[in-house]
Image 1: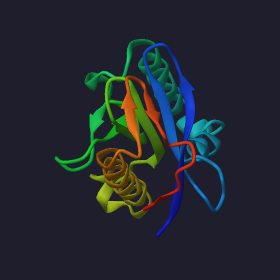
Image 2: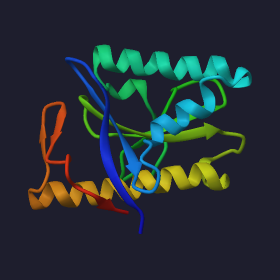
Image 3: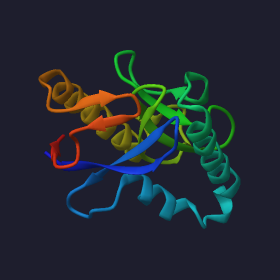
Length: 158
């Protein structure tokens, strides 16, 4: 079991972007993605495309058309960007107002399942979503438009 928490990365009038953070290092998965690719010249245009997509999501909302479905039929795992490039950022699109950003990397295989690193990022998001749904069903967390209420002091075990 890994202990995780949920942190707000950015919010606008339309959307809140969260990211999961593992207790062992205190850095969000999105921050790890940024630190790995922000200054990577080889993937700079892909990275800029992802950051631009996040800005659009903040401005317009987390509309379905801004995401590429990646997980299973019964989860909300998505990838950004929707087209082009090798770099992927995996996330959970909870609603048109709430997105939970994970980590990502260079997709050099036909599917993320073939790459152990990418597969691990998607699995973490799938496990986190399952626990989050359980907390919402039990009433520990509530969804209020663009906010997840009650996540501040919860450590999720995925």
